[in-house]
Length: 221
Image (cartoon, rainbow, N blue to C red):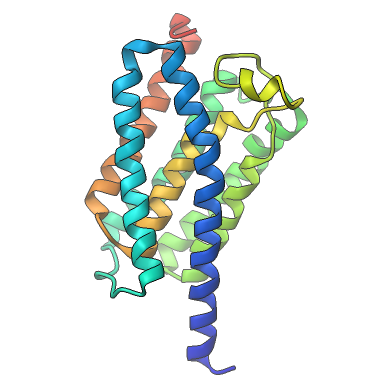
């Protein structure tokens, strides 16, 4: 297989992996959006607006991938950094939401994801920022799938539906994984990059705001 064929095979494999990851994360993220909007009606409208808006961003980039359309130029250094950095920051924010600053997981799987897997994702993401090698973005995508392993036993409105059916819930990392999907699709197919950056960091800001409200002011629960 020549170099061009190898690149083509990697790109084809990458787009199918991203599609699979996006679909899997979307299932958990949709359930989380529904559960949170039911629990707190005051934020239902903005939460669903974010859901619809970000789904449109992801769909636009995936449509580019599978139509074989010509992409825009590679995001510049700042844009690439802003998108890639949003991935580990979001994962850390989700961990803080669940555990607080102790970062002590509620189950062995949760502890592994927080203390070992999140730093590994951050290292892979940093390597991609520095080198720009496409296979590293594929690796980050695959690593994100691990966070869908049910890991949380905290009985709260976000986990309740899952815990009634399984012993552990995958919901804790749903929003930050969706940030990862937005970032990865924008980095891969480069459509609506400024909007993708804004969406990623808006969700991360909400996650960090939830951390403060939940652990220091018992809001929203």
